[in-house]
Length: 325
Image (cartoon, rainbow, N blue to C red):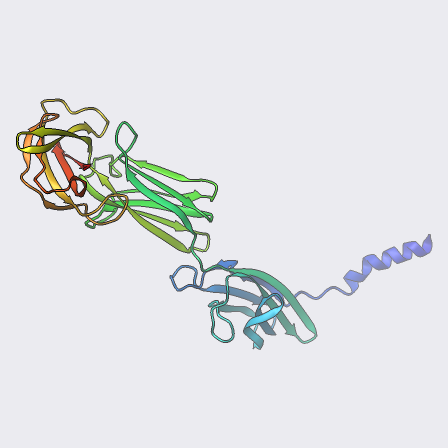
């Protein structure tokens, strides 16, 4: 028992008699994830090492145990901070592949040694937009433009609506987190950020997705915001084939019969939701004015209806109506 007591006392006293020397590296921090693809976002990884005393420092980037970049090699440094950047390239100046790498730090001061490792991830590829669509929706559906987005990677998604002719965004959604098993649906009601109706016309819908490394992917679609919708009503007049329009306002209510409307035919140069081209080409024939539901416009001989838009204007709205042959 006495022997065991003596051993216990020795074990307790030894650390105080021969204290462990403090480490020569007191702090080692590094970027955990970066994207050296030249887009200006997280292009460089930064590492910082704080030395308690002058030391020789080696810092290497390794992949599966193989050194791909030597950032410091037995470099003598005074006590204090040592800061190093990595541009994502190997010793031959080539950009490394995406993936996880190990930062191997070794420091030496006399007989003292220090070794540790940090993990760093290179990610230069943007998130994948699996599907993006935009289409005009007629009442009574909520909104005038339905935007849907699906991704293959976790991302923050933002949607901006701006006039196709240029200018700042009039309405923005997000950014919102989106996962591959989710989907984003935004039914835009044709109003700006202050709740005011935007001017009728074609709008550019820009979808931008960013991942954790700030990589970016984007897609553009278009939507027609008319503040007015309608369907064509074919008829026959003494002058030949004609067409009228049954019109509804942005809330889906039919226009009162006494509402004045103006009908015109325009060549079809684009289709909202399909391309970004302005949809309205040159006028075809003369426009007509009349009352809602009663006005008719004659289709000129030889004109192919499927290549025309019927444009109906009333009370600050402008409906874009497709015709069939």
